[in-house]
Each structure stands twice: as structure tokens, then as C-alpha cells.
Image 1 (spheres, helix red, strand yellow):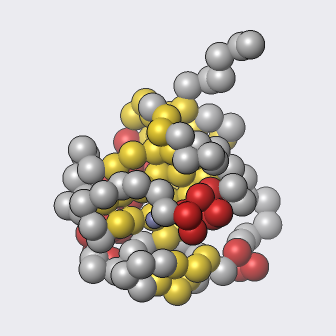
Image 2 (image 1 turned 135 degrees about the horizontal axis):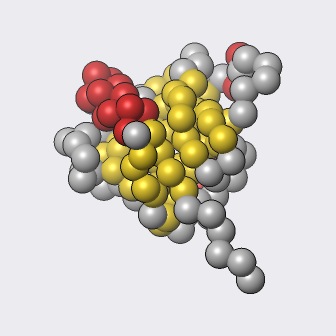
Image 3 (image 1 turned 30 degrees about the horizontal axis):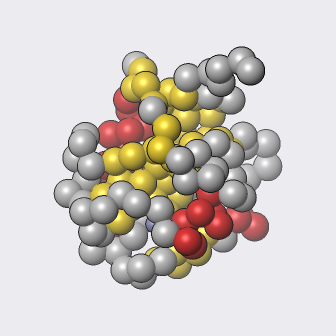
Length: 125
Ligand SMILES: [Zn+2]
């Protein structure tokens, strides 16, 4: 089997995710990631309903022609571990699923594949 291409995220995007998570605290922030096959490049913010334990994204508002490569959401707790509801969301969109946990810094995020397995992501400029 051929090893899958390494997943990458733009540094600018990662910084945006950390700031957006901070600003939403103590509620969850949820958004989609757009980009190329293995590179998450852009944040796609759609209307969503968030609480302290869950969030629903209104994907009927998705602009046409956007290539969604994954999801991003924050956890107001210090545990970036996907819940059952998270795994259900992961299975619907792309390959990258980033969870940023409190305190929303460079070390408090993780990326998962659609099955909830942790994956390594390279930060690129
Ligand atoms: Zn979650």
C-alpha cells in the first residue's frame, strides 16, 4: 500500500483557528476547512448553533464550488478528544478534522482522520 500524502495546514489558517476558538470561549466554535486535497488553506464559516457541548453547522448555506477538506471546532475543555457526535460530523466532510482545546494555543490542538484516528499535520507557510 502506498503511504498517503502528508497532511498540511497553512500557518495563517492555524492561527485563525486559535483566535476564533478563543473568541468563542466558553462556547464552541465550528467551521469547515477548504483547500486542496492534502492542504487545509481556508476557513469557511457558516451559520451554526453552538452551546457548551455541541454545535450544528448549517451546510445548506455552503457556497457552490468550495472544496471542503475537513472540519474544525473548539472544545472549551482542555481535552481535544472527539466525541461520538464529533465522529459523526467527521464522517460527513473531508479528511482533516481539527479540534482546538482550551487554552487554544499551539500545543492544544489535534487533527484526526474521518474515523477519529489522530493524524500528524505539517504546518506550512
Ligand atoms: Zn467536539
